[in-house]
Image (cartoon, rainbow, N blue to C red):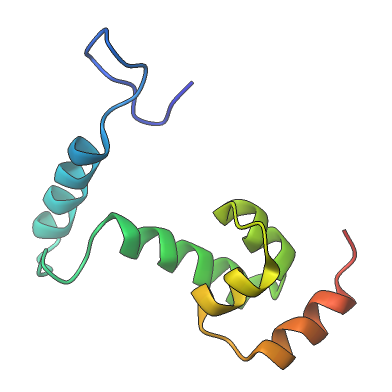
Amino acid sequence: MFLFPSRVRISAHISTRQYARIVKTWITTIGLDPTLYGTHTLRRTKASLIYRRTKNLRAVQLLLGHTKLESTVRYLGIEVDDALAMAEQTEV
């Protein structure tokens, strides 16, 4: 089951372009500049918020689908040494 199911029989979910249109509408509706926000912004913001609240890099790594922890660290823009120290303290 998809969060945004398609109304077209060809696909079970909406296209990435249609999702981008929906996000643009949301951003415009709340009075923000749609050129400053997009689908990737939402993805990155969600990951950053989860990391800030939990400090659980492994969880964020899994949610983002990254195979390497270093990729997640770079994506979040945190210091590698701090991230690795926290990762070592986190049990999975």
